[in-house]
Amino acid sequence: MATVLCVVWVLCQISIAQNTDTTLGGFFETTLLVTQTSSLTVKSISLNAFLKIGNWLTTMDAKFTDSQFDTLTFYTSGALGELTLNSSVVFNPSTLAFVSWQSGTSFNLLDLAVSDVLYVALPQSSSYNLLTLSGTAQGISFQGTFKTGICPLCFWEGSLCASWLWAICNANFQACIQASDAGFKSLSVSMTDFSPFGEILGIAAILDTAISFTADSKTFSPTLRIVPDWEICVDLELLGEISISGTPIEVTTMLLYGLVGECTLDNGVTFTFAESLDPAKNSAVTGKSDYWEMLKVSGPVRSCCEDEGSFEIAAYFGGDPPPPSSLFGVGLIRGSFDLRLMDQFGFVFAGEYPLNGTGWSLSFTFRVFW
Image (tube, rainbow, N blue to C red; front, side, top):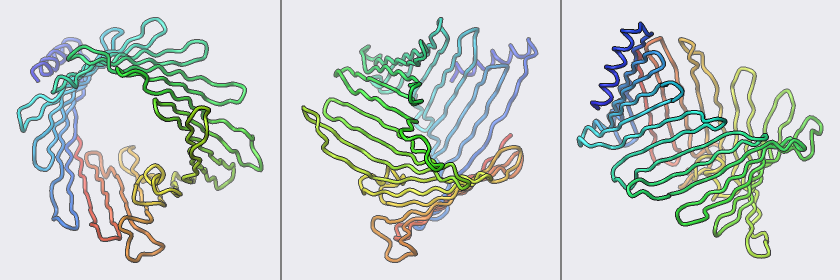
């Protein structure tokens, strides 16, 4: 903490001496929660303050969860010549304990972008250093990572990824190989935006595929997106998976497990639906493991001060346990909206109502800016 305060003091002195632009601001935020089984309670409180001097930014974040002051974070970032630097320190004030310290550096070396992140935490065995190198050569973009533990100093894991455009089919390819201290971890190759049939009657079929190899499994995951060029445009995605194994290679599972569609109007309102065809894939398709179908309406809301608000209403079908009786089998209704009501005040509401009686919940978040 003392280090961060010293940095702030030095920056202030530099700002005064050089007449550098200085900005001070922040926000206060509190979230109230009420459920079917509990009365209105204060779920969390956040306090943020920042000081920006030139291209240097220092922030302080204090968070209270369930009335307990459990997180205090100091963060500083800025540029020093060709170097971009950042550092953050996290404490738990309720136990007067150090949580973590993270320091990052990034710069360009010839045609390479270099970044290094040092993370120190308790216990010391969870501390690490992550070095990342990225660049482009001959139309191929690549990125390599090298992660080591520092207490003790040892290799943890590394990866090398390359991506390129296949001009013949106008498709994007990416290949990644990963290794850990135990040896080979995985190899994956993916292809996106491949149109095998072109456009027929204003409808384009776009194929995305991914092949993944690990030490004990091989998976081929195709996704077919139906993109019609119509006035009312509905983008459809057919989600599938093919598992292969053995020597010689044989197909063990071929599965079409979901359908996802989306339609966006000119005013920004978006209609989305998702249909899971396999209960084990509910979470990947609808976002919730207990529900096999989802219908959602979302979009922007006019808000204050050039900040665009948003709303979302979603209905999920199914449930565990299933609802005893509901219209069309609706199992869960969720809704939220986010508004900036005035220059110094914002409001967020979120609600969830399961029709199987497991308990509704409402949350209200108030934000005050300065």
